[in-house]
Image 1: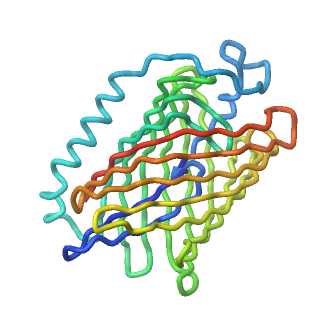
Image 2: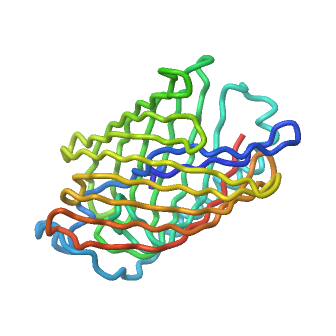
Length: 295
């Protein structure tokens, strides 16, 4: 998303923790964070793209954070009960995350940011999975105009060859509160289920007429039955904010509290190498943490 980045680990079955890494190209996120108007200086949206500036403190929308916190708590509390009663083909998870910087495709969009999200998956048949979800950014510190973003996404995955899966989907982005702008982005990706879980994705934003190609890989090192170290990396080329190349690395320590709840904390790095003068070459270092519960 970051689409985003989604690393899903620590699934408990028959008393054994199965450490698994699911890579979804960082677009988003898993996660996928858009808005060309984010690249305009505050108060002058017509002036054109500007270089990244120091983040200014901005008050968080407390109501949104309360709603996200309560929603996550409800999922945690109800997950053992609901799990025993719903169709086993359906799974739902809620994540409450924090990033000390919000970086999208190498570009810093904001400083401290809360990123609550919820996602549902449905196994339509033996080979096909359907998914849809909502991801939101709630910056504490902002760099550009737009301080809130909502991403609604949906897609389908199915095998095309042995150990090779195709992912087709799209995202609808809304930006608040300074603008009513929205964009639609489609994507197609291939993921090879192997030791390093390599994946390649192509994204196209129909409103901005921008393309992005990204390749990622990752590996999870089991530490014990409940703990694992998740390592990941990605490289991409994007027309977002002008043609640019970017790379990123991450390392997360994950701990599974129960079958339905886990937490992660770790470090990230991203490097941006723009081909145009819209942005400067930039390297970002930051940290993030998350708590996920589901059924």
